[in-house]
Image (cartoon, rainbow over all chains, first blue to last red; front, side, top):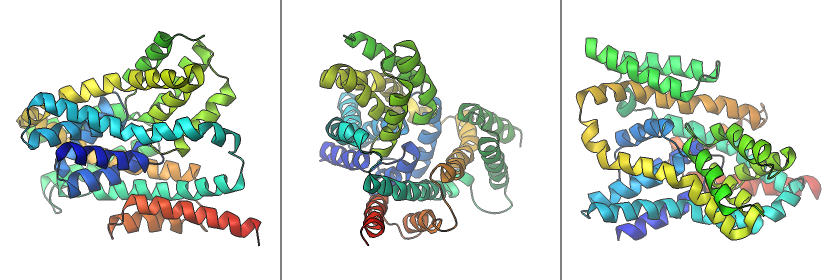
Amino acid sequence: MIFWQLFYTFLVIGAFTFGGGYSMIALIQGEVVNHWGWMTAQEFTDLLAVSQMTPGPVGINTATYAGYTAVINAGYPAWAAVCGSLLASFAVIVIPMALVLLVSGWLLRHTDDHRVASVMRVVRLAVVGLIAAAALGLVGTESFGGVGLNKQFIVSVLIFAAVFILSWRYKKSPILLIVASGLVGLIVYSIF
Amino acid sequence: MVKYCDIFWSFFKIGTFTIGGGYAMIPLMQRELVTKHGWMGEEEFMDQVALSQAMPGVFAVNMATMTGYRLRGKCGAAVAIVGNVLMPIVFILALAMFFRTFRENPVVERIFMGLRPCVVALIAAPVFTMAKSAKVTWSNVWIPIASALLIWMLGVSPIVVVLVAALGGYLYSRLRHNP
């Protein structure tokens, strides 16, 4: 049953996301694209691009979008798909919300406890790896075209290198970089 | 007592103007919650940021839950969360309804061919920024590398990696403090 699958999947995604939206991407991709097939890998990358330009956290945006497309693909009408997207968004926040309400008071008094500090230090190290895995998982023919001396691959590698340097070294705004890359794509692929 | 509509309106604004992920929201949150309304001090705000990052889930929603709860209990938390996610959900729903037909358009497809490598780079860059704030050194760099390879090459679930890391951190503190 599609609604139960959605609820359960996003409940788990919400419960195990540490360190913000980016660390969630590998997990969401594994579930939503590879396991359930609710959207294609290319659709997922496009959604990531769009969610950088629309308001809202990546986790909520993906839950809303996947909830809608999963229910439509299963053959239900649009109103049911809207319910599916609300259900998935609710599922993503319900466990963290309960945890925050239950333990945030206690944790705020124990942030200097050596066990809590040690657990968080190692989890933070693993989260760096989680984000690296998300970036590696998105490198593929969907994002770069086929490897070789073809037009799309060369243009893609150049865009990747430029955005990486501008974002990492010069802290340029993601919105600016996305708008610029879109323009470059439009101009280059229209002319050549 | 703080009014529900003030809590709602503050988080509605924060949610609507968060573009590019939760952390971009911190300066705006600080202005709304600390400077403008004085609902908490600078230090309480920083503690709340650290704790929201440490807890699972969406960072912005955790901040909304904590602030709402602090101000008006459980109902306050609910009001803050709804205010925070309302606009994002409306935006993405509209997008999900029209995205598929819209993507077939050749002009849109060319734009997305430029966007896709850009998104990969935007996710790769924070790896290096975060490595600094997570205090990666030569002696512990194997932890992020092993995590990335386990997930990417062997298809291990990120959930397992986080749980093992948490357990490892706990055992490490036990070993150091109870020899």
